[in-house]
Image 1 (cartoon, one colour):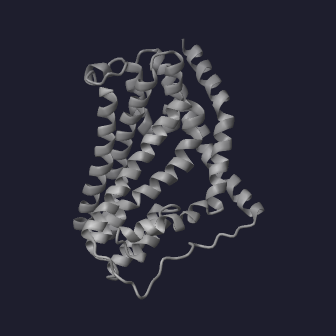
Image 2 (image 1 turned 90 degrees about the vertical axis):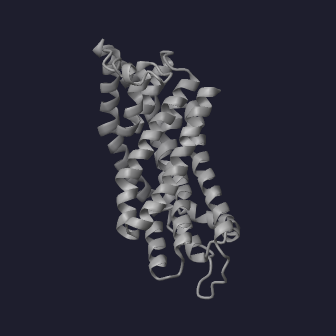
Image 3 (image 1 turned 180 degrees about the vertical axis):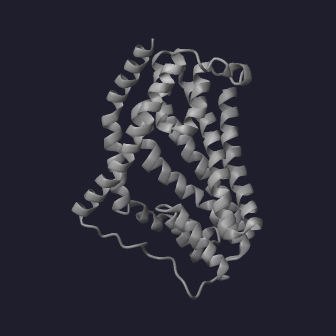
Length: 311
């Protein structure tokens, strides 16, 4: 049984790995060429209508390339008195949208679409929809709570950082970045996938049904939920295997991924965002930011899960 599990895992990885390599490389090239920077003219009118100052607008666009740098910029503008606390809170929460786009394009789509196909596309669409709704709610709140100001010492940049890289240089950097990411995939995701395949076939996760029986998922699928937290790529491969063996259908596969995303988002907020925000904004403002952002992000994910359960 163990040998059969290993063989199934290896065969599945062989079939999807070439597509994963190509996807990661293309995403890395897009980042190196500054594709995200070209979005600024599109977003400028929206940010203006949301009553965001150019300071917050520039930080928002920076988040398409580096969410951490964007939040640091917002903190600096707030410390200098260029934006007030309300705008600081809303602008920081708004950076979740560029981060969602960035993660979807660079990290999730290169692996989940080749592995899961239409299920991966559906999950990715819901992931982006979550971030989009959060951004729309923030923009609506900005229009209602913020006062449009004429900024005399700043303008929306016509373009962000100049990245006129020679194609050869961009390709070289992209390959190096892709190799680093692929090393992590091979060194961690592949062995974890084999281990999970073996444990599932041995029935090691059947006990989970005693504690998570309220979820309409088979024991094998329940094993994938914590795996999404430990290694998303391994989780995608496992879900694909469970679909091939007809343990999961489209709905159950999508529900499994959303449940895993709920755990991932919760852990990320508590272990990364909360400490980081506390360090640059202080405990008071950081708790407000986390409460709003986590409430929106997690609340929408739960709503999607409930909708899928009732469908």
